[in-house]
Image (cartoon, rainbow, N blue to C red; front, side, top):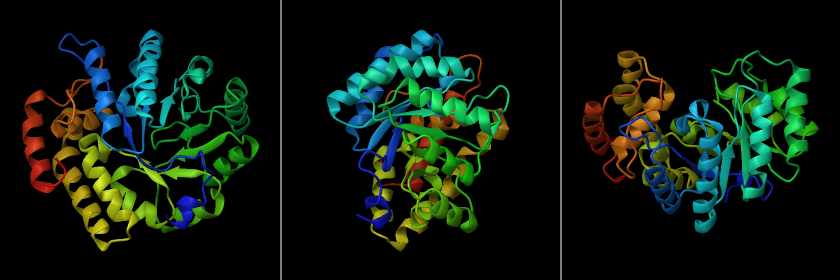
Amino acid sequence: MSDHLSALPEHAPRGIWGAVMLAVGLDGNIDWSATQETVARLCASGVHGVYSNGTACEFHCQTEAEFDRLSEIVAAVAGAARIPFQIGISQSNPRIACERLKRVAGLGLSGAQFTLPDWWPPSDEEVLRFVSGLAEAAPSTPLVLYNPPHAKRRLTLESIAALGTAVPSLVGAKLPGGDASWYAGMRRELSGLSVFVPGHTLATGYANGAHGSYSNIACLSPKGALQWWAQIRAGEQAAFEMQARVQAFLADHVLPFRARYAVSDAALDKAMAAAGSWSSIRAQLLWPYSSVPDEDVPPLATAARVAFPGWF
């Protein structure tokens, strides 16, 4: 194990984590049986952990009853599989996020992912008050900050480091990464935290000190993401060649959907999952968001198998 992984605290996340995604039926509602089957297949794939209620899980469209039911499914299935799991508690309303954390704290989760309050950008004082409040609400639950590029308040590396010092239960951060200067700052400021970067930049991220990914590549193929991780961990030049192939595939076959249909990142992730065929996930999103049309999934599946023949 590399030094920068072994230096992490035992409970800190690392490796390839797969996103739980919702199976949406033809009626537009969550198909709970298919969703449970998808969680089970993800847990059986060999990923190092699973997480619910990131962007790909459409946390922003769930009712509180749906959030509770999904959290219980993830806890039951991942618990039975003895695989680490995180539950995202993110909500634009910080009071609801805190209540979500209180409700799931007893489910045996490995950590809770959270975004910052997002209707009005919080000040430094408000960020600290919010994260400290989460820690007080569930003192034994590790916390992971999810601070994506579209967040209304983007924290600097120095601000995240200060949060980690003030709130010891903050163990990790899901961040967009950056250039060599950004990674130098990450190594300097966040040495005590587990830093996860986007799946399609993981070879570069790991080489520069990142610890893993909540992986969009695992949306397409958990098996492929794990094969690539093995190359990355082994320090093979092939890992960087694979990264170039991954980014070319996304640019040629996935990102064009964004302009063609004006769809979200969640729609792209679910289209890749549907094309990967490792579960019964369709490309459909919950109302009112647009999805990649079903007829575009088979050509995407063909392109993926041409690009990555050993992944499926």
